[in-house]
Length: 611
Image (cartoon, rainbow, N blue to C red; front, top):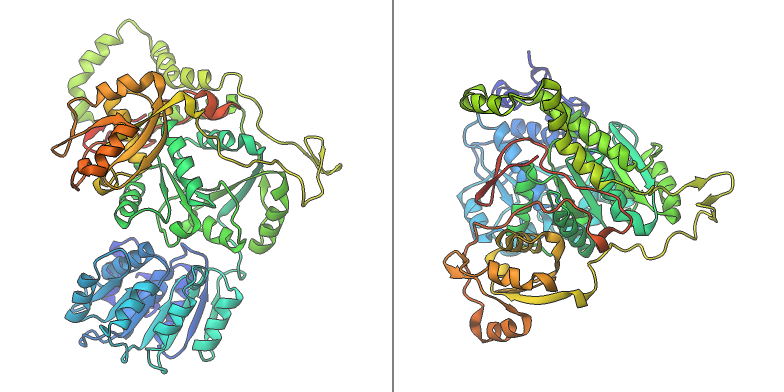
């Protein structure tokens, strides 16, 4: 018997969740569901992200609501569009065997008229972000007078994002006798005030200790010089060949710079930040969920509510300003009982912050050493060997090629074939990491010094913690192209489009500035003719692509030469040159990798082999 039956969940719901793989309740589900099924208590549940909170409140709601009535009976507020859609889809999946269940997702960045139409057709559960929900309330387009339950999911994140007033306004339209269920990863004073204001003697359930981190996450930190930060970051990534991670930065600019540099260096990466349109954001998240991206570079706000399975690593390229945000960042990995690693890259002055975070999460960090070049080469080599050993062979498809393959290898012994095959990866990494320096900063605890320099725990550290930029502008020529953001190009996609059509590497492209109907980009002076010639005869969705020197192209564009808006569906690529690029990384650390899935995949209209 499925244990969810014993918790009081009906058979048709249990059958649905069994098909989804729900076999054993998580601790938060096991302890909260019986309480919430009574429907008689306000409730505060404190548990880390990824512990199954959606089912913890979603399954009781499906038991308690009257689905013969087509008016709003439950309101679920959450911080982000991604979480809103996730909760909505989960509830629909749980209720797939139940008749007349209507769940509507209400969020910004999508058509409000479509959402209003769904509400008018009848709905029992509304899942919403605060901003869009308040907009609909202000239009008098929804009636919450019969709402019986309000769920505040990820309450601490909503407050961190500045939704306090919106939440107050929304809750003021709901009945006083409703039941409020609040779920949060941490319990700061602001969340405690909401509980006090809107709840009466709530049942409080804490999984673990308040504000602590997930026990399945291993926390590591690396002490590095600011000038070596990007090099060390790449080396850590290369040392984990099957990494599927989220990289956190403080600013939007930093996310863009790192993502573009990674793309140029041959990594499958893209950025997620507040300046992206909703369409661009959806495209990035779709690629990440499909694992055609290995690294998602994000700001704290942009990553709120992201729920992607099997994230192996969270990398703090920059530590968060608010220490509580570290809990949310690290909670993106080790979800649903799995394990994960949270890595922080710090300079000498940030060691004190690490100690503060340790006190907040109740766990000690491990001081890790940046791997040497040889360590990376060895790890990549055996990563390849392991992948080959475990690859699934499609006997039916490959059988027709076996005779030709055997003829090619006829003169080679088994040992020779293995050596040659392994050398494909080994030689590349060996060449890349030849003479790679040690990037670790040594801390002498007895003398309180880093690399022999005094350190008092607060001051000191490296100055200029800046991301390495491209070479001097005198080496580059600025060009105009008559495609821009209206054609759905981001900076990373424009980089791919340029490299695909001109056969130059990403390292030879400088700054990219995407405008509305046109864009500017820099290429090294020696590559200008190759770029111009590469785009001769190229069209994009029926429109001829025009490349000119920036001054000429800009004046034409202002006179209407930029062209009309069209849908974009082709072009673009991910990948790039694996070699080290002079000015980009003088310190010599880091390589790059290819898609670890070992599968052929389709990427914007063309098939590529990834290794």
